[in-house]
Image 1 (cartoon, rainbow, N blue to C red):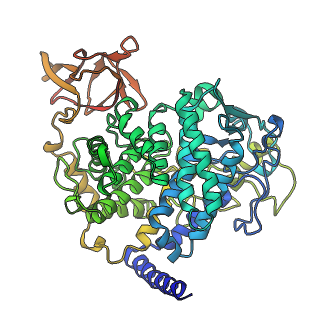
Image 2: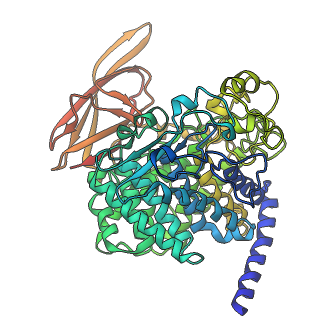
Length: 627
C-alpha cells in the first residue's frame, strides 16, 4: 500500500508539471493528447464497448469474416473510408505501443494511459482473430475499389466485406512482419498489467515473424486489391528487420539481435539512409531502435553492425533538423514537407523518432553528451526537441493560416473533413438507412461543416506554400488517417511533461531565417555516399555550351560498387535538378537504375547524365541491399 501511495503522489506531482508545461508552451498538450485518443474511438469497427466516448458512432462490420469462416469483427478503419487495411493498422498499433512504452508515465499524469492502452488493445484483439493459424494472416476486410464508389456511414455499409489473406502459397512478409512488430511491442505494454495477454501476443508475434521470414514476398502481390491504396513500395526487408528489432526488445533473446545484425546488408537496414518514416518504409525506425540497443550497451558482439544502423539513424535526425547533407524541405511556415497528399503523416512520425532519439542520446552512456554530429554542426538534444515542438505547434495552429490541423483543437480547424461517418448525420440522431448514392448526392457535396466532429483527427495538412482548402472533396488535404495520429501520442505526452527538460533554453529562428540557412552555399555542394558506404559517386562535366547568354553543362555521374558483394535495389537521391535526366527511372523513394540493370556487381558501375545550367545537382545514395 505504501508503494502505491508513493506512486500516486509521484503521478500527482507530474500532473502539476503537465499543467505548467502546457501553459508555458502556449498549447495544452495534455488536452491535445486526450483528443488524439478520442479519434481512435471514432475509427473503431465492430461492437462498441460500454465506455465508448465518441457517441455519434454505432456498431459496424458485424459480419466481417463470416463468408470466410472466420471472425474478423473489430479493428480500425484506416481513414475516411470503411475498409480495414492490415498494413497501416499494424503500423498504427506499433507506434501507439512505442509511445506508451517511452512516455506512459506522462500519459498517466495526463489521465490518459488507460485510454491509450485500450486503443492498443482494440487493435491487438483484432490481430489475434486475423491470425487463426501460424501461417495464415488476414490482411484486409473490404474492397477499396467498391468502397470508394460509395459514401456511407460504417453503420450502413452495403459494400463488399470480402476478406483477403496471406499464407505460404500467397506470402506477405511485409504485412506479417509489421503485424509481428505490433504484437511484440504491444506485449510490452501489457506485460505488467495483463501478463497472460502479453504472453499470447508474444506467441503470435514469434509465429508471424517465422512465417514472414520463411515465405518471403510482398503482400500486395498476394492481395492485389490493396496495391492502389497501400502498396508496399519499400518491399519487405524493412518489416523483417523491424519485427526482429521489436522481438529483441520484447524478449531479449539473442537470436533476434543476431538476425538484425546479420541481415542488415541483405535487407537494407545498414544501406538505407532515408529521411522519411511511415506505414510503408520502416528503415529509420529500425535504425533508431538499433541505435538504442547500442547506446544501452546491449549490442554484445554485434556492436559494429549496430553502429552502421546508428549512422543512418543520425542521418535521419540531421536531415530533419536541417543540419544534414540532404535536408527535408520546409514550407515558408516552417513545417517539414515531403508531398502534397497527406504530408502531415511524415511530420508526426518524424517528430516521434526525433523525440525518442534525443532522449536516448541524453539519458544513455557513451552518447557524447547527447549531441548528434551532423555535417552542418552538432544537433544537441534540446535543439532537436525544440524543433519537434515547433512541428507540433505548427500542427496545433502556429502557422501562417492560424489553422489547427487537429480537428476539434483550437478555434479554427477543418470543418469539412473527408470522412464518411463524420460527414453524415449520426445513426444516433437519425437511424434511417443512407444508401451509397444518397450519401454522395445528399451529404458529400454539402457546403456546411460535418454534422459530427472527428475530434483529435490529424488531417493531411497544407501544401508546400502553407495553403489549405477546407473542402470535403479535397481528400489530399482534409482526410485524416490513424497513422497520422499514432506517433503523436508519445510526442504529445512528452511535450506535456516537458517542464524542466531544457526546452525553454532554445528558441528556433523564424521560418524565414531557417529557410535561408537551409539554402546557404554550404548546403548546395555535391553529396557523395558516406565514407562507410561501399558505393562511390563521381560527377564530371563532359560538355559545355552557351545559349541565350546562359551556360549549360552536361554532367555525367558514375556510381560504382566498391564492395566485394552485389548491390541490389539501389536507390539514388537527386536534388537541385533544374534540367533533364537520362539513364535512371523515377521511383517512390528517389531514382533507381533502369529495369535492365537489376543489380550492380562488385567493381561495376552505372552511369547517367543530366543537363542544367549552374552548379551540379546533389546526388546521394538513398538505399541499397548488399548480397
